[in-house]
Length: 351
Image (cartoon, rainbow, N blue to C red; front, top):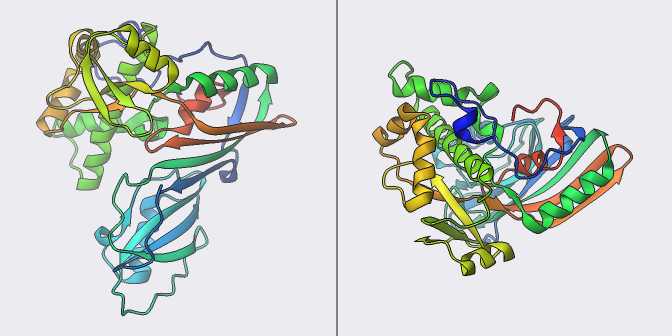
């Protein structure tokens, strides 16, 4: 079902989006306990061991990244804004990630006790603050329990995803509890909700994510999410560099088939880079929520591009009775739940 068929105009913003592959007749539970969802940040480089910033390798459980930042600020006596991090990690999970704190070389290394929900695993130094989006990949180890259905169907689907990839949807956690963040953004744009800077950023991000998911869903409905159309832009696998717009041609489709490039979809803002048919689809999606698009434009958000597809790396899996353990690596910004959604029907999922 396409966006135009499934979403009426108005103030409701459903999270439902099309799957790339037929829905498997298999169900399972994800995150029965936090240890069923383990994420480890991979920088892609090593801290230098020298410099005016302490880099802290932290493990947390059932806690947000922002909560750890607050604790670190109190324990070290520094401002929250001075603490660097690369990415926000899931709350209902066990995650490991880097933080940075400005700390003069001559100052004795601090004692960092942590809390019952997070602990310091390692400490080193680097010559600069850790910035958002610096890390290259995230390594995931998931355990899906209470699987009901034919295990062979899941094996076949995982092998397909390993070869062809899965839609690079933003996960439901991006949209807040029950998908409320987009509705809050609508109220914010209308002046009915006053927000702090951090909240405003969350709501703007939710709106752009919602538009992107709807665009990708429409491309899946049209069976061209992995096939070029006129006016497409493209993302190079591994680097994220983009080029285009280009007219559809056989060479591009061969590169798509080989996984060398991915079609890049819009993160809505000023001055879209798409053209021709690709731009027409973007405009169709935006017409379903003109007030949200205008809110992004009023906020002076610059348009950007994001790959429509992800091909997981280092993917392995094994069965233990009715439980399935999966390990894989995804680029920064990709959601493991989007992969799981293509292989199994998750109990309690909203999308």
